[in-house]
Length: 288
Image (cartoon, rainbow, N blue to C red):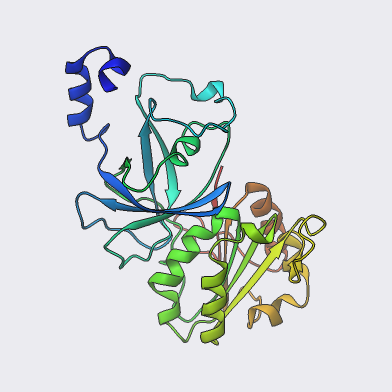
């Protein structure tokens, strides 16, 4: 397969032996949330991968890797170039103390280069995981005594799952709430885990909402897009703490339009964006 892709057996051996292009991890579990959302658990060949909750790493597959049959035609911008490996950044959802595997929460882009290939992976299949984690979307700059509201759309929930699993719930002096938005209730990944955490931890609140209730008519919970929740006087009761820039921090992750809209509303409340070498209590990570 590799020799056909690159012209010679010698060339294929070069790519297999070069760490930049080689597969170094195995899919150990593939959980289908919906037809368009999956959770991948990946075991690395070399243990000891270090990361902070909220960080990301790069996943990669060779361009010759199969795509799922139902995927749309691949975008021209992702046509093969000089790099035989397609790589994209994905937030890590597993806890930072979890050594057995890394977990990723992935939504398909049907015309994209990598996700239709990731969705074709089965347990036991191989892929590439970058050797290092990256990113500053962590709780490092959030004081231990600060309350935290985690706002995310879709798979923008992933870094928050890592934070909850890693450190947040161990600090019972900090009140924390997750406001998660999706199109439909079946798109609310990790819902059972978050509902269980809320049930057994009185300092944690989970607020799921969907934006298309006219289709998902059995849903009995909150509806609407996320930013208007930040203006609603009831948000503080839902969170269990005051949405005040003094004692609290807000994190935003996912859809850039949501982040921009929410930022305007939060800045009106007095929140200030965290920037490099500048203080702030509003943190964000845009997914595209």
